Length: 143
Image 1 (cartoon, rainbow, N blue to C red):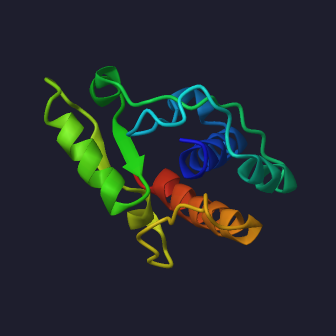
Image 2 (cartoon, rainbow, N blue to C red):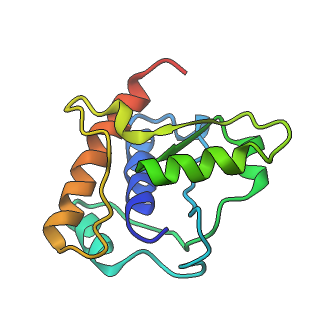
Image 3 (cartoon, rainbow, N blue to C red):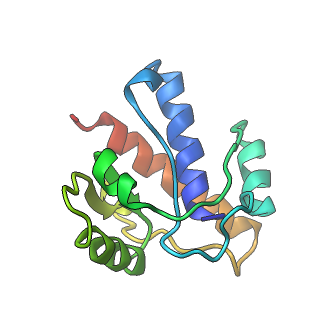
């Protein structure tokens, strides 16, 4: 989790801080795979976020059983993530997390947030814009 999810995490953290409700939220991001564990966010994502005045303080980690038991929501980026997370959640007793695509909250109906890893800076900007739209809509919904 070095591209999309740390961008979404940082965007949501800024939104709740700006709304002065950060004390009501526990925000984190994690990967479904072990591939990038311990690494910082992709430099292109960091550059994009700096451009928008948002700091990223994240080190990649893999999702844990405790995440399924302690978070109310686990929001993911694409169908592959959704399948992996639902499969993993089925192996967890007392899973309380609602698992869904972050894109379901997009007012522009872009359901999937594509991985920008093999793309360019413009692709990271697209991810940022999608995350802003989705996170704002998610925050506005009653919880």
